[in-house]
Image (cartoon, rainbow, N blue to C red; front, side, top):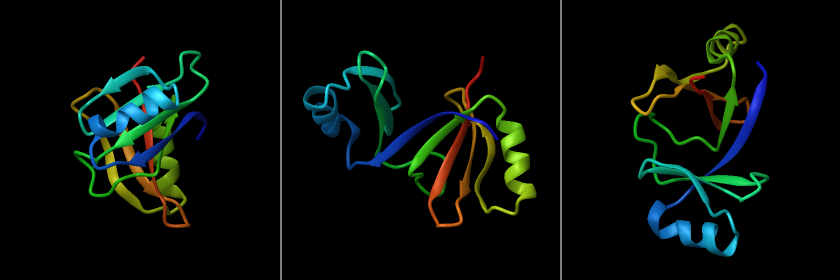
Length: 117
């Protein structure tokens, strides 16, 4: 698998309540997307970003990071071949991404995401 991006997923009680700190004080003022339960905020130069997550809508557990890749199908097959636990199967989500969750050997849940081109 080749990672093309990594985003921290910070668990928050409410995305709208939390975003002021991250957009105002930390300067991550560009809202890349906001689905209500997850939103990504990025610095104007796109050098820094964070995702705020109040609870994943479709997966059984929240992930600690999201990793983007150009070939999510190959990443899924590789995770299975290596025997890693799949927490959320490869799914095309209603908001357009294709993703799955895998548990790292240390127990962390990782969201592996492919975006449409």
